[in-house]
Image (tube, rainbow, N blue to C red; front, side, top):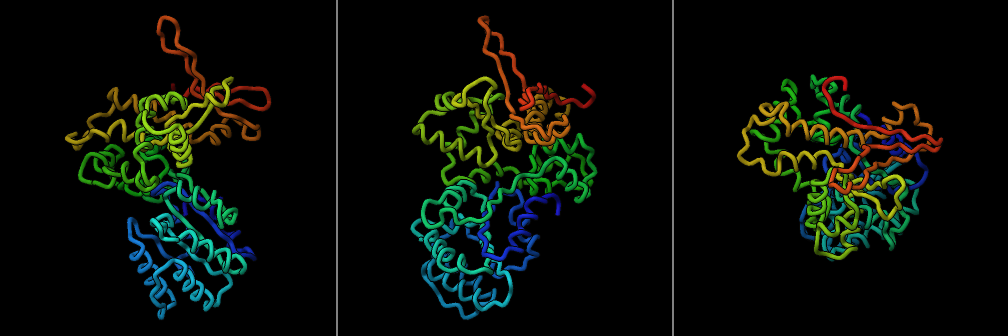
Length: 414
């Protein structure tokens, strides 16, 4: 398995534990959550089931029953509530003879249909049965990060503080993408790997679509402008998988996509009218939790003046090239090399790539062991309207030193 060393170590601790464990994994769509769990446990689950998208309660319960029947409970009766469904799951698990019984509920937000009573049943299963045993490992997983955070991690009812392990699954780093590219047989040098990262970010599934034997430009033409349709609607599918009502999220992200250095809460509120201030705050918090935005302060400013900046690389690529790509030449990327549009995008995307790798930058500067805060800085506009001075990155160190970093993308020494 490529990367995921910390996640694997945590899952091993869960497997070796002498008590029941409740593990919550979350992360954006296509980042590799399900692959991580199935590969680590080698598919050896006491029970495994994945929720059905946009299914009715009846369809969800029927699917759950069929999974029980095929995984060791052939005489499972029909049931009409989630309480009854989890009761039959308990029956299945009680009849198994193994030290650790791993239950994997994938895409768990899809179980929670309106008025389904799913969360109540999950609370009853864990609090009333699994938690008092020593042999259950309950792993729940989902792409709807906001649902996992609000309904499971911040639950104020029966599941409050019941999760024993939280596991956010982050996108790959550049190094892990390089390892993945070698594993996939992609003959890209590091500059080309960086360019792929600036379009895909570290989302493993996107990288798996790159075809060996084609150049980066040929792959981009195929995936974004040519015959393939895997990536055409990915932007809309991505937001739909994360948020139940993504309209305001779309508006905020599109607004921030036009402001390179980001905007304050007040500026966003003015630029995206409609809805209460609490709605804006909630959407911003959710977008930060899902990795689309970063929230930072300019050095010397108070916390309330914090700036929100769009850092999701695929979203930036979508705004620049895919949003209005209908009718574009199917060889657009090959033909557009070294044009001002591509060069401007590379400069902006490279800055975001650097922000995704602050730990690596600290290591390269030899300051990993020093407590450090990351900021940006921009001056105010002058009286004659000149653009303000901007510093891309400041690393404010506890040892009294500030590193000033200017990030530039260049194919040759700059």
